[in-house]
Image (cartoon, helix red, strand yellow):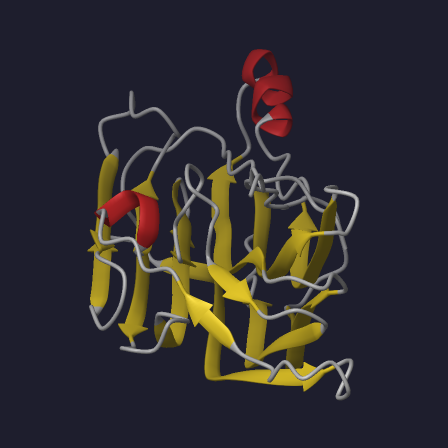
Amino acid sequence: MKLAARYALVAGLAAAAGPVFADAYSTASFGNVTVTLIDLDPNDGIAASISFLPNTTKFDGGAYIHGEAEDGIIGGYDPGHQLQRFDKSGAWQSTNVSGNAHTGLSSAAASVTGSASGVGFTALSVSGKALSGLDDHGNYYSYASVPFNNVDNRGFVLSANTKVVFSVDAAMSATMTRGYTAGALEGESASALMSLYAGGLAADGSMLDDLQQHGVGVQYFDGGPLGGATDSWAGVMSASYSNLTNHSSQGQFWADAQVGGHSVMAAVPEPETYAMLLGGLGLLGGLARRRNRTV
C-alpha cells in the first residue's frame, strides 16, 4: 500500500464549546521485534551474521516522536482555538521516549520503548482522539519512528550470502462514533498507517528495497449514512534483505507508525460560507512514508 506521507486534517469554522456529539480515534502499535538470519550458502564457509551500526546522534540515529492536538480551525484564528504539540527524540539504543498533547477536545500520544539490541526498540505505539460538539471540533496527529535516520542510512552490516528478516507484531484500529444533530454540518475521520522497511545493496550496486505497509481508515462526510464505523487489522509484518554477494554488505532497517483524524460538527452556516466549510471537510488523503535510502 502506497499512501501519501501525511494527513490532510482540515475542518470548518468553530465558535463556543458545547456538548460532545461525536468523536474519532485511532491507535497503532508494534511489539515483539525479532531478527532472523538465513544462510543462503551453507557451503561457503561463512557463518550467517549481522552487526548493527549505532549512531548516538539523537535525530540521525535514534527514536523520534511527534504529536499534535488541536481544537478549532487549523491555523488558529477562531477564539476557541487550542494547539498543543510534542517533538522528542532519543539516542540510538536503550532510550525510552514518550510524549502526549491534550486540548479541550483532542489528544495525541506516542512512545518508543528502547532496546540495547542493534534494532533499537522493543515496542512502539501511537494514538489520538478528537471530539466534537455543536460548533466545536478537534483534530489530532501522532507519529513515531525508529531509527529516525534520513542522513546516514547505514543500519547494519550483513554477512555474505545471508538473508535477514525483521518481524514485528502489529495492531491498528480506527473508529468514528459520529453522533447526529439535525441541521448540522458534520464530518469525521480516523486512520492509522504502519510501515516496516529493510534494504541494502545488490550485487550490481543498486538498492534492494522491501517496504511493507498496512493501513486502516474510516471517514464520514456530511450527508452520508448515519452511524459510526471501525476498521482494524492485526498480524505479523516482516521485511527482509538478502545479501547475494560473496562479501559483507551494508543495509538499513526502520519502522514507523502514524495516526490522525478529526471530528467536526457545525451549525448550518450562512450561504456565503457554506462552500468554504464543505471545502474544509476534505481529509485523509493517503499516507505514505518513503525515506531516502542511500547506503
